[in-house]
Image 1 (cartoon, rainbow, N blue to C red):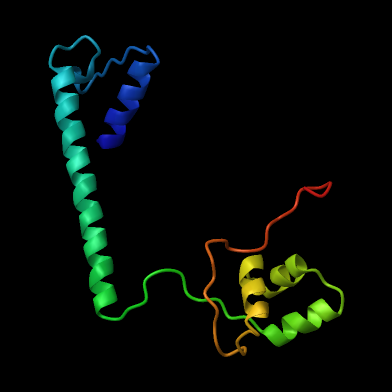
Image 2 (image 1 turned 180 degrees about the vertical axis):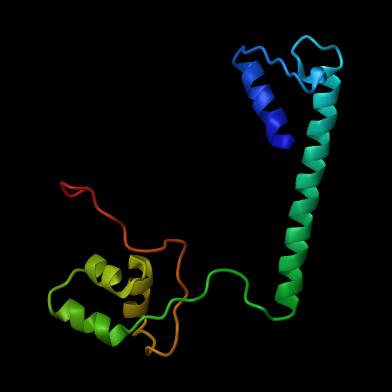
Length: 136
């Protein structure tokens, strides 16, 4: 329902006249239409707010129970990364081969790195940056 209202409002903004066979109150000329759209919009906004509050409460409850919320930490074999770098591979190439982000790999290398059985927190990136042909 909310998506329908949003679509109708977008069409109105573009100057399209909306005529509904099943819901006559949606017709552009209906005098009650503006009121009903306002009421449905308010209801949708309230539902979004409640959803957000429930989500935040669920995350907070999980944290209080000690449950990790968010992306799992990445595991990096720093020894293998060092070997690949010593063989001439670039940091982006090594990051791609190890399936970690470039920044994550650099942090692990700078800190001396964890052993393969420990982890380093991964940033927001999901992998190495892809370069465009021509070096960009």
